[in-house]
Every structure is written in structure tokens, then in C-alpha cells.
Amino acid sequence: MNRLVKIILAANLIAIALLVFVYPHLMVSPGKLIPGHRHLEADCFACHAAFTGADSKRCVACHKPDEIGRLTTKGLPIEKPLTSTPFHQKLISEDCVACHSDHAGVKRFRQTGMFNHGLLNTKMREQCQGCHKSPADALHKQITGNCSRCHSQEQWTPATFDHNKYFELDRDHNARCVTCHERNDYSRYTCYGCHEHSPMSIRREHIEEGVRNFDNCVKCHRNANEDDIRGDYGEHEREDDD
Image (tube, rainbow, N blue to C red; front, side):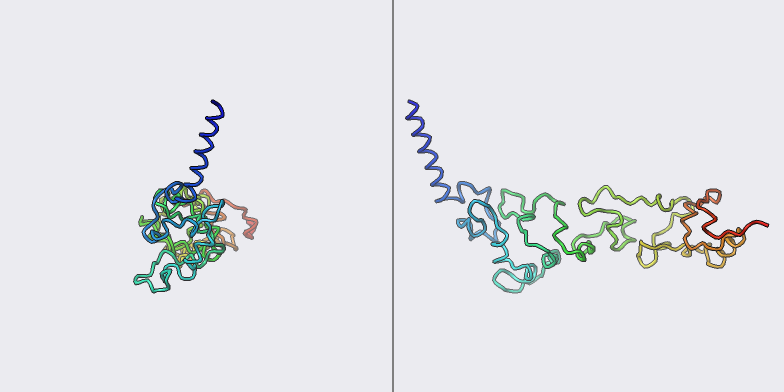
């Protein structure tokens, strides 16, 4: 009896193995291919290498990175060039299957937001808005670029930047970003964007207090409270009181 069971099991395994090789698209395919690859439905090895799965080298044999978004795989110009794909020319390695799966049974673009930005060259990583549309809220409408000042490339939320660590946007400083950060440069700031803070008036007030070096305002001032002035006046060459 045991011998008969083993023979039946062996016969089934052999049959399944033969079917996998003869009709692989029916036996192991997770779903139909996307329309553009429909002609490859019965040719698994056009994209897959034996025993190792989908192979990016086979992808770029047809989809040349320099032509993605501009030309079809037959070399014909795309009537409306895609604006969301130029980053393919900036990839430092060809790892197509890290993002793409052409079977309908698998998410065509694997988990949203899981794109590995490390595949981009350094310069391209700084050009977020080449691929991403800026949020339409009031804050982001004032900002162009500089995404990395608040967001990481691993996840959009939560934002990592805390403005209060540098300066509190309190009752007297609820202003537009450009008031302090000119030309959308968030690595620098100026206090002279406000009508009350002219260079002459600031200089006069600080000289009266014996402070001669005041080029870094937030070192002492972190909010609008004049009684909450921080910093070491010695570092600002304060004159000795006579």
C-alpha cells in the first residue's frame, strides 16, 4: 500500500513539474501581463532567468534607460513624452524589479512610497519636485525645493524639522517664510525683512546695550520676549559698564 502511495505521489510530482515547464504561464504566473507585454504571455524567459526570477538585464534589453519616457521599445517617439520618468536616466544601477512588476496579480508598482532613492545619483536626490508634486497647503505654497530640510527620503511623514528649536514663530513673528528666508534659501535667514528691523535701528539699539557684534540674531533672541534674551554677552564684545 505504501509503495502504491509513493508511486502515485511521484507520478503527480512529475506531472506537475512537466506542466510547469510546458505551461509555465498557467502554472506559476501570478496574473496576466500588462497590455504592453501581452505578446510575452507564453514566454516567461523573456523576462525571467531560470531559477532566479525576473532579471533586470532582460528588462533593459528592450527598455533602454536613456529612452524611457521618450521613445517606445521599437524606437518610435512617444507622442506625449512622460514627465514623471526622466529620473530613470539618473539611476546609478539597473534594478527594475525593485519597483516594477508587470503581472496584474502583483502590484504594478510595489508598495507605494517604497522607492529606494539610493538608486538615484546625489544631484538627482535633491530635485524632489522633478518627480513629486508640491503639497498645495498654505505653508508649502511658499516653498520651492529644500524638501530635505523637513522630510526624509525614507518617508514623507512625520516631518523632522522643528522651527522652534531655532526661533519661535510667536505673536510677533507669524510671518511668511520669505520675510526671513530670502530667495527661498532656508539655510540662511535675515531679520531685516520686517519694517521694524532696519540695520540702522538694530545697530543703534545694540550699541546702546554695549553689544557690538550682533550678526547672529537667533543666538540671543529665540522669540519676541525682550526679557528672554539668551547667549553670552562676552562673546558679543559687550562694553564694560562704567
